[in-house]
Image 1 (spheres, rainbow, N blue to C red):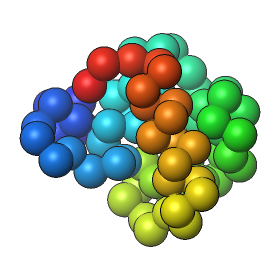
Image 2 (cartoon, rainbow, N blue to C red):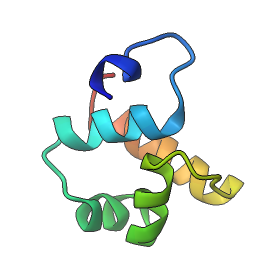
Image 3 (cartoon, rainbow, N blue to C red):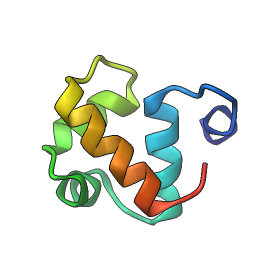
Length: 68
């Protein structure tokens, strides 16, 4: 998953997982930091569809919390 996160056009789930791990956050902490429910974070990391608002919040978390 970490290798996939570094690829061009990496999916949200891979980039989120990588940023969350780099920041040493668990799923609950990442959800709190993004302002999203933990199940949204878990779903995104499982490559499930995420609503636009939640996607924007998770993208912001990725930008804030770590390199890909």
